[in-house]
Image 1 (cartoon, rainbow, N blue to C red):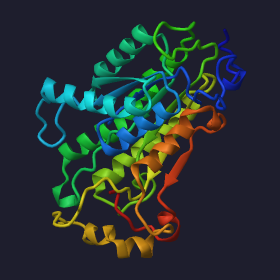
Image 2 (image 1 turned 135 degrees about the horizontal axis):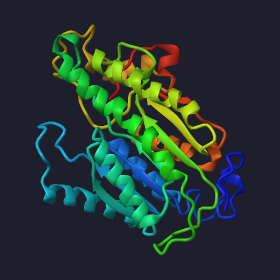
Image 3 (image 1 turned 180 degrees about the vertical axis):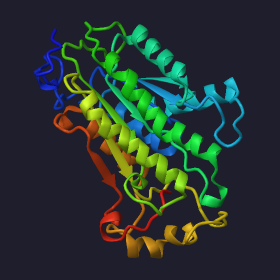
Image 4 (image 1 turned 120 degrees about the vertical axis):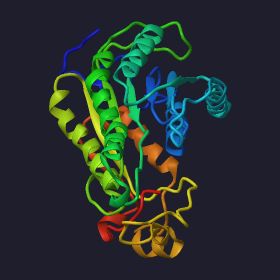
Length: 317
């Protein structure tokens, strides 16, 4: 086994992105926001590429009420996700895991549980976020703090704590679809928004905290030198997650966001003339998680159908 930073995943006897049984064969993955539309699609995509186990993390608090989610509701959502994925990919174990993404101890406990159960960690995807208020009149310090915790602090915890776990080498585990890990490598993927690079697609809180998320990725390149771990950002544009913005309180916004969400606006402002789908974001995660992206780190992959290139006017959903 080797932890020489000059080696890459292609030097491993057990790893190849061209494996017939999956380019992520044997991988142990963490996905936050796993019960949200994009998170679900990411879990499905990683399973499709042969991941051995995916910790599908969802909030320990209800996002709308801030109240503790009942154990029954959490178990039901986790079981439903596992059943949906395992119907097509029965060899990937899906573990529902309650996680407060802005809680440092929760993050450390998750990593401990992953290593105790599997002996390795390979991929960490931050796919949970918070839009926040649509206008500045509804934005105060409390909202800014929550936005920073959801969109900036969670990626920071991944950068701070996941690489040490990803450096762990191991022999073949006793769980299904296991494989040895003889080269230190890992991939951290932060799913942010086109708001990470410009303003105006939502309220100030979302723009500021999305910039912070991309800042974590860019800071991470030098932090991760010599570790074999890569970190990248995905900035989706308008993604159809089934939310209609008609009737939204638009106080403080320069235009009604529902007008940008219309089919007419999509045809006029998006190069591909439509909103994207969660699976189209998930496919980029699959690429960044695998050895196909072995020389890509610190990048921001914009997945917006060309909207920000031709007309930077959009909404995130």
